[in-house]
Amino acid sequence: MGRSQELYRKARKIIPGGTQLLSKRPEMFLPGLWPAYYDRAKGCEVWDLDGKKYIDMSTMGVGSCILGYADDDVNKAVKSAVDRGSMCTLNAPEEVELAELLLELHPWAEMVRYARTGGESMMIAVRIARAKSGKDTVLFCGYHGWHDWYLSSNLSDEKSLDGHLLPGLNPLGVPRALKGLTYPFNYNDTEGFLRLVEEHKGNIGVVVMEPIRNLEPDMDFIKTIRQVTNDLGIVLIVDEITAGFRLNNGGAHLLYDLEPDMAVFAKGMSNGFPMAAIIGKSDVMEVAQDTFISSTYWTDRVGPTAALATIWNIKEKNVSGHLIRTGKKMKESWKSLASSHDLNIEVSGIDPLGHFDFKYENPLVLKTLFTQLMLDKGFLASTAFYASFAHKEAHLKNYLKAADEAFGFISKSIAEGKTERYLKGPVCHSGFKRLT
Ligand SMILES: Cc1ncc(COP(=O)(O)O)c(C=O)c1O
Image 1 (cartoon, rainbow, N blue to C red):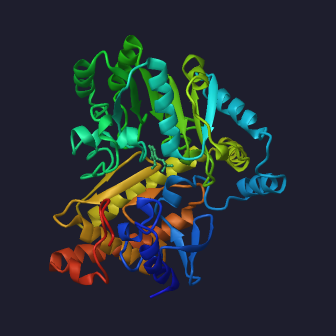
Image 2 (image 1 turned 135 degrees about the vertical axis):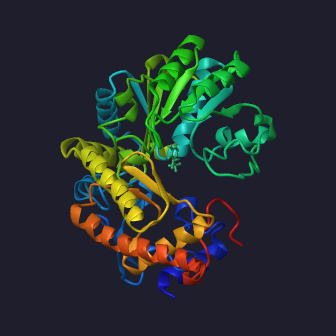
């Protein structure tokens, strides 16, 4: 066992759940064998605690590092901010510069607030939207963080979050008084959305959705949502935390002529440094003066500095074009490799955020075996690939050669009916559960 796994065994005893983010749990990849901790990361290369090097062909810091790890330009800007004092009694001027840049990129928006993580910035947006509309009910589609407003959806129906976050989540600790305030609808399901509006008409203050994630939007769906929310005085929030800055220089909503009331950015905007922004129309954002929303570390200098350097690079280098091309090639290659080995997989996701599923009775066994085989060949890889600017032609070529062999092996193991026997450890987890 390497030092990384040893450290993780210790962590499981003193950190409940082992890590701070479910998607970074080694059990989600390769229980007992995933390298768990890193010593160094640069571009798309990662060194574990034993000095072993891997190429990261998975999610690049769960979608946070669009430019690649430890990007030179972003790091240079951040180091200078640290040297000049990352915290002070006075405010960081970069806050204003970043606000101007975000408003220039999103001409419909007039004001900006900041936070540091995705979930908390969604909480802020929902608070402002409820305050503005004077109504508590929220209709939502997709994942928007761990906070009470969102998890409370499972108080009315324990399956409410199944298709949006994870199946079987227990809203333990979420006050029961929040029951009946949040309801889910499915992406591109215009009729389902209209039915929900009819059911809760009069009480709905907020609609929350991602502009795009897995499927291309049906324009009727997008138009209906904007029309209905406008007609009923409902505040429309688009969550750009993961989609933003991957398809264009800004929010993906710009591509679909969708003018929301608020948009929220986080992971995609600052290349791994904590930063989040809530932008919106001034009549909505002004309400933030009437409801108390305030936190010390939302004023640090590193976040806005990193965001300015990241966005500048994304614009200058046409990074979204690179992400789309690279992700598209990966999706197409998965399909052709699978078909050449007679493997049944389903490929989905927008190009920069592609993933595939094994369409078999035991998909988690196959997923675990794929991760194991790829790790043996020096790749951090699972069934999702989030393209970054650091992923170049050669990385893809080497990955695809390894994936070709892995798919061939998996296909043979299925034909032999022996897949599970090739696993060196337990099968990976698919969702949230206790570890011990
Ligand atoms: C669309 C979306 N909203 C919200 C979040 C939560 O962000 P964070 O993990 O920074 O709290 C995520 C994170 O995966 C996300 O993808």
